Length: 112
Image 1 (cartoon, rainbow, N blue to C red):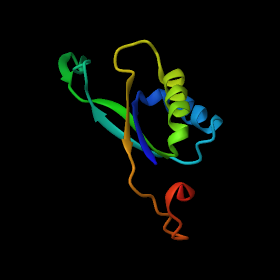
Image 2 (image 1 turned 90 degrees about the horizontal axis):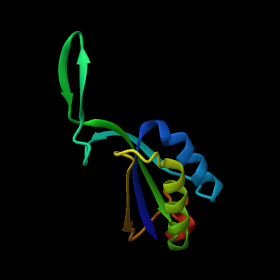
Image 3 (image 1 turned 45 degrees about the vertical axis):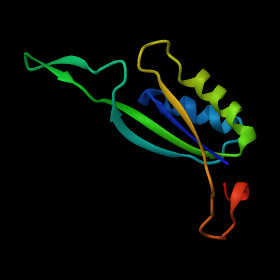
Image 4 (image 1 turned 135 degrees about the horizontal axis):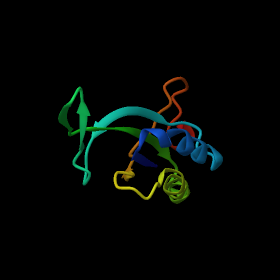
């Protein structure tokens, strides 16, 4: 099992969700997060005063996958989340030791 975590721009969530559904991903966890990378934030003007926004809003998507689905999922996210602008996000892939479905006690790939 693999855990895929993608950090994307908020307005790309629907496109990524649809792309993952199209390849057969049945579930995901979505969290609103804030952070920065190379962007290092930006400055905004509010009531005539300029201030720095250090942490930008992002969406964190977590998906547990069978190993054979990882490449398809990465490709789907890359195609649907890319804008070509700085701050498009990152994809992280971890080994997932165990998965258990609480309702049935089923474990492994079948629990996803």
